Image 1 (cartoon, rainbow, N blue to C red):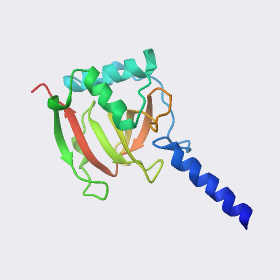
Image 2 (spheres, rainbow, N blue to C red; image 1 turned 120 degrees about the horizontal axis):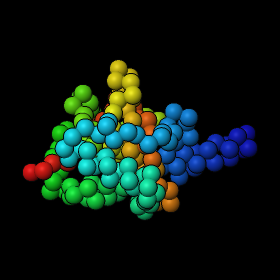
Image 3 (cartoon, rainbow, N blue to C red; image 1 turned 45 degrees about the horizontal axis):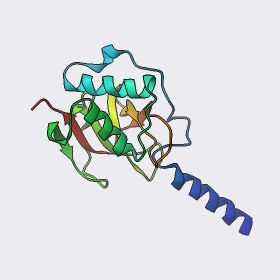
Length: 167
């Protein structure tokens, strides 16, 4: 009995230390996307910077997934004053109508691939629109020394959407 409790405790600790990452095969690094997926306007700039940070620079941003996405937006020329709120809810809902997502949007969502954590990622495109599975740039967070990546996320519980804005 003590052995099982010890193993369960170690497993729980591993999940806790994992932060925004996941142990499932569903959440894995994807190959570099074609720039034609990036659309036009500010979102394209955000995605171009994210792609550069992930694939060319292998840029590490100490901190959380939020810190990494914030760094991408800042480097793309969209500091806080050049971001518009598309949707603002909270972790428990209401959740966003994700049909409004555009490439380059910052999505704050409940990480269904690695619960019970919230997560920030940058929407690229739908992989399965009906199941709300998207391709997104993101970062593992938890002060890990790993670069960002392109991964799959389910956006069924997206509670915040920010968009780069020229205004």
